Structure formats: structure tokens, C-alpha cells
Amino acid sequence: MLAPSDVPPLRSGRHLPLRGRILGSATVPEDHHPPLRTFGRIKSRPIKARQAALLETLLPQIRPPAGPFDPRALMPGAAEVWLEVGFGGGEHMAAQAALRPDVLVIGAEPFLNGVASGLRHIDEAGLANVRVHDGDARELMARLPDASLDRAFILFPDPWPKTRHHKRRIVQADTVADLARLLKPGATLRFASDVAHYVDWSLEAFSANPDFAWTAQAAADWRNPPADHVTTRYEEKRLGDCAPVFLDFVRN
Image (cartoon, rainbow, N blue to C red; front, side):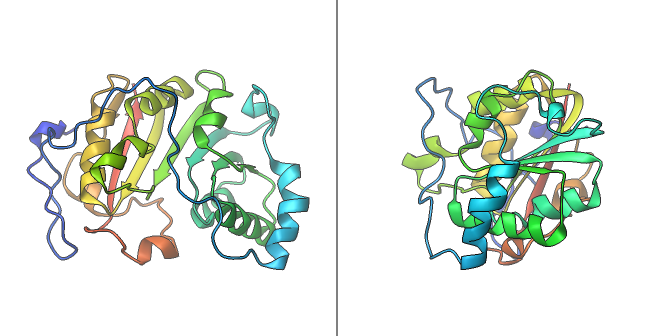
């Protein structure tokens, strides 16, 4: 495995080759204040009638319990339990669930339009192995027991690009520590972003925690989408300042 300090600087810019970045320019603060919101608006455009109906009918059926719970009790016999932190429009979450019907996939998303879109994907695919938390992922994570997850995804999260807003990024030392608590030894976590500074920030945050090891062996491991990655329409928009970067970590 590569050590982050072995990787030469990442240059932002869509048409420049990505090579990673030496850590040190994206310091992650160790804040211990009450969690700040990691998201902006919870609703934007009007929700279509069909999706609004799913918010009333399907969501209550697949919403996780409000108190502490064992995720395996939601789907007895599940081979694994996966968590997607901030599933956006739900395209990736639903596609992964369809590929692995034996896995329980739990998604968290605070943006109501995203929740509605995710419910549409779940409904159209007839998925029975997805649960949806319509709120802050950290609230959901706090209700899960230790070593209850086999895999986690944080894909293209809100980058909060202004320096004064970096403390609102979902990737913080406390969140990384909670993910380490939830993931079993040998479990995996994937972070992806097309914002160079957020890639640096996240690589530093996860590498600073001894419970995680970065699995990259060569530049292609973060430059190219992993074989099991599902590319979404949002990712294809390339709204960031660099090509998508994929960081895979394993729980020690």
C-alpha cells in the first residue's frame, strides 16, 4: 500500500493528470463542538407528484427505526450491511442494491429532493434490500452498534469550498472515528470527489486515523473508477476542479 507522503502533488484542473498530494495543505481540525450542518437547503425545486406520493407511502415503510437498532434485524439473512453517506439522487445506492440483492443497503440523505429521487429509483427497480434515512447521516450512525457495517460510501459530498465553511464538510476527524467504530475489521470505505482540496482533506483525515489504511498501490488506483463503481449522471457533469478521484480504505 502507498503511504500518502509517497504521493507527489495533486494538480487541480480537469485536463491535468492527477497524482495525489503530499499531505499538509488541507489540515482537518479536531473539533469537539456539537455537529454543524453539513448540508445547505433541504429542498429546492417542487417535488413531482409521483415522488411526493412515495414520500408518504414508501418512505415510512423503509425508514430505519428512530432509536438504536441492529441493521441485520431489518433484513435477517443479509450477507452484508452497507451504508451510503449522502446518497444524492439515489442512483448509485439503488444500482448497488440491485447488483447485490443479498446485501442490506442503508442510505442517508438530508436533501428532500434527493430522498424523493432515491425512492423513485427504489420503487422502479422493486428493491426490497434498501432502507432510507431522510436526515443527517451522523444521526443515523449514532444509532448503529459497533462493528455493524461491512462497507461504506461517501461519494461526491458537498465540498463547502470556502475556507470558513470547511468545518461543515462531512469528512471530519469525529466522523472518521465514528465510521471506524461502525466498520468491521476488514471492511472497506470508498470516498470519491472531483474537488482537489477535498480529496487532499479526506486523504489526510482517514490517514490520520490508525484504524484506516489506504489501499492504493499505484496512481491508476485513484485515477480510474474501481471495477465495482457505478457512475451516476451527477458524476458525469464534472462540476469540480479535477477529474474524479477514488480513495479506497480498509478498516484495520
